[in-house]
Image 1 (cartoon, rainbow, N blue to C red):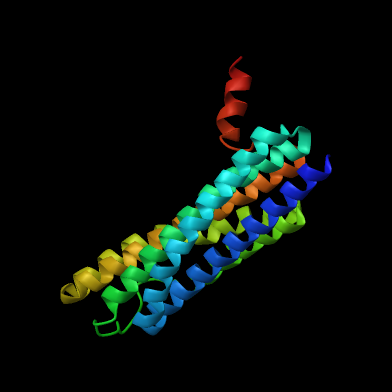
Image 2: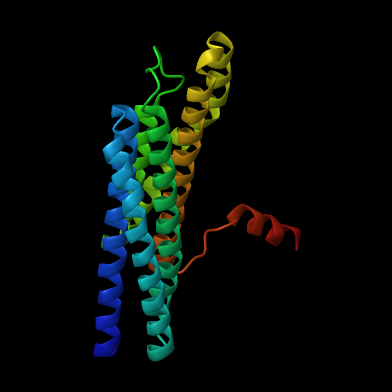
Length: 227
């Protein structure tokens, strides 16, 4: 690796971690804003999304610059391609955090529910842990941590799947709380999507480290057997 390419890769690493840290902070704050009915914190998350968008554009331009001028190969090429994809996932995570913050603002004027329709705290804790693990895996190029992210996704998917029945039942019991319950339904879906993006990041870390594309693996195995 040339000295210039080495410097560029190190620069990309710092940029993607700065963006990842900002996104993780946004998710934490957005969930806290919902649980505490904190409008000021929610507004800070929404404002922070503008900086996430700017950093996402800067990182993409830096990746394209690195590809054009250095023509990296092998691991270095995989790294730059993976960072390009992770960059997109992080920007989407920022968008979902903003959406949760918007739900927090809508909920702020509502009376708190006597009972939550699903376990929001456990769900959000798992999602935040998944994102933190995925970012750690990226920094350390740790394939074990990357695989742990994918295992945790099952818990989030289960809570999200059970949420629909629980929210519909709550709406029937307490129809005048329907609007508030719809907000909680949306929050669950946003968290589930953040978990999916964390899984995507973990897959890209495995691609960096092992050179294997894990997307649609079942379909590819089925197609291979058919031939």
